[in-house]
Picture 1 (cartoon, rainbow, N blue to C red):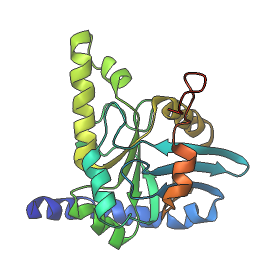
Picture 2 (tube, helix red, strand yellow):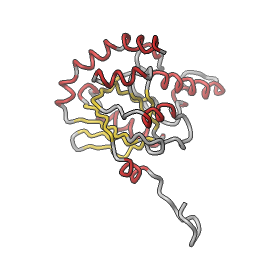
Picture 3 (spheres, rainbow, N blue to C red):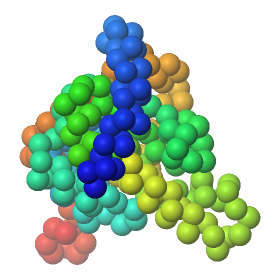
Length: 224
């Protein structure tokens, strides 16, 4: 484990340096992405994007009870350790990941690399490069990599394993992934100009937004 951490530190020092070079352009822009994390296993947080007057709000990160791919180990790390607050930058998949696309696409993963040494070190201790936001699965990507329908699930699972091997993965619903991609395609023309922040947020506030609404299934019955 120690050897792997040192390898990651050396391999991504250049990435960390390049992110520093674009710091000025991003902070000068009015475009911003905020990840509000709680450290909760049930309600991990919310993602929001703002480009001048155009906003995308209430993209909720899913907790331990979610179906589909979920990096529960990373959620537990957030619950035990402090939330890695600080400045980040949008980044593409790195060549060594062997990811099927060179940039963020629909049903892919949106990656954020930390800018500060302290935050970079926090991830390095976990053997990770930063944060990645993803949906339920990678079936649409996998289906483009094989004509064998029986292999789609296997490849999708493999892509998820490779993602969590190098990134702290945060899960959103497929519906929210569609909203995120549509917004990204319209407004994130120059990722380097976007400021990205991770902040600690109040659990009750996030829960009030992300908790599924309870319904009364039978007249006079309890809320479920």
